[in-house]
Amino acid sequence: MGKTFKKPEALSDKHTHYCPGCTHGIIHRLVAEVIDELGVRGRTVGIAPVGCAVLAHNYFTFDFQESAHGRSPAMATGIKRVRPDLIVFTYQGDGDLASIGIGEIIHSANRGEKFTTIFVNNTVYGMTGGQMAPTTMPNQHTSTSPYGRDVKNTGMPLKMAELLSALETPAYIARETVLKPKYVVKAKKAIKKAFTYQVENKCFSFVEIVSTCPVNWGLTPLESLKWAEDNLLPYYKLGEYKIPE
Amino acid sequence: MGKVLMKGNEAIGEAAIRAGCLNYFAYPITPQSEIAEYLSRRMPEVGGMFLQGESEVAVSYMIFGATACGSRAFTTSSSPGISLMSEGISYMAAAQCPAVIVNIMRGGPGLGGILPAQADYFQATKGGGHGDYRLIVLAPASIQEAVEMVMTAFPLAEKYRNPVMILGDGMIGQMMEPVEFPDHLKTEPLNNDKWATSGMDTRKSDKNNIIKTLFLESKPLEDLNIFLKAKFDRIRREEVRYESYNTDSDYKTLIVSYGTMSRVCRTVVDNLKEEGIEVGMIRPRTLFPFPGKAIRQAAEKDTCKNVLSVEMSMGQMVEDVQLCVQGKRPVRWYGRCGGDIPTPEEIIDVIKSL
Image (tube, rainbow over all chains, first blue to last red; front, side, top):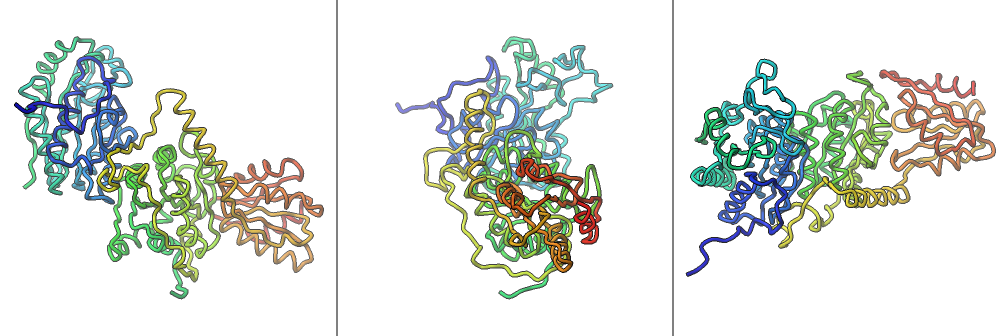
């Protein structure tokens, strides 16, 4: 019997720097599997954000660029416009994409840039120590909302998949999660669709992944999965929000 | 191709194409918007690419992405826009990306005005963005020179893997002059397989390239900075460019002036010569590296009693002139800002009063 399960070629052997219970590892693997399956590793350029995934380039075996905070979509635009043959993706967190980089992501989506964005939403700034993000839930405790997020002062959590779906420009927009194996299977499908649209030069593609941050949430990995399922999924509804004509 | 009469901004756009750069990202800002207007029409004619970004911040990352993946790319802006791009410029300097940036300066600070100025000397030569880095800064004094500097900027940026800034002013951008595009300055990009994130297939390699600027441990970050300093020192040794004017004479005053301002000073030198007063001039063509040695030697001439830095600013380059003259001669500054350019008469009065 042949090998039925192996590490994707697009994934490196480096030890992870992510915290115990962090979902980045699963999402990295899904991206790597999709890049292997599409056979595009030799022409892929990934873009690492500012945030926990700034070191993502350690875990992949294709070209990578580090961006500045929130600017990955502009960088991806630059690459894709001068080298449309490359497969380009940004991998961004919620502080990076939904706060400081919201202008760049909206305009890239609206121009219909032919790259893919993997948006990992765990409702906090992970790397800087769990500060409040635009996606933090009402009353959620973070290091800069110690009394819980007061939405009267800070507004409601931003729903990026819905916001980007409101644009008229055709795009593929989905929100999935990796909280349970059944969700992982669906997330993989969405990521593969997103990259396939890019390979076909069809449209901008965006997959939001609802994720956890056990360390900054002050929960165990298992508690985090449950908290996210109980509190995040009712607000951040899963599914495909936009499919190109 | 013979001489054509062209507006500075349009000539700068055409020069980039003639240099072999077919990728241009920009955001509109006066007094340089004609570059984007010109290239939005011209790029499609030559199979090139123009994209109007959503902000100068975004544009700086578009050229970061484009140059990091090994393509030639450039942008143009004016003072407040360069402030916004300074974040990306710092990253490009750290990542050693050979981007070319044109700054057609207007007055500041803040929104300032839209008339010509040289108020971004500090920003261009001392940083602008954060961290220990330098740009190679070229300062044209005519449209012909702007064309030649744009055309040489790309190979220069690639040779050193460092961003190059063309520091012009609103006058260079807005006026018209006869100009010729030299064919011999057209160049091919250097091979960048060793570092560019061009896709492994493109360079037939199994090794992935990584463009990064984050170094969490002290040693690798210090090593990068030591490497960059050695590069900047080499640029200081090898890339100094300047013009001497009337320095064979027995001048009492040495003028240091660049760009549009130096053209007025040239008239000052000529007019005073007719009155029997000799004035010498050094015109830096590179602001980084600064022609400090040439200025010091010219200032140390026996007949030279004083040095005057003439600028369209409240006194920025004068600090570098003072540094290089090392107190051996008194160094004065004269300048105006807001858009009014000192007249020959004003400068002559200043020289006579020294």
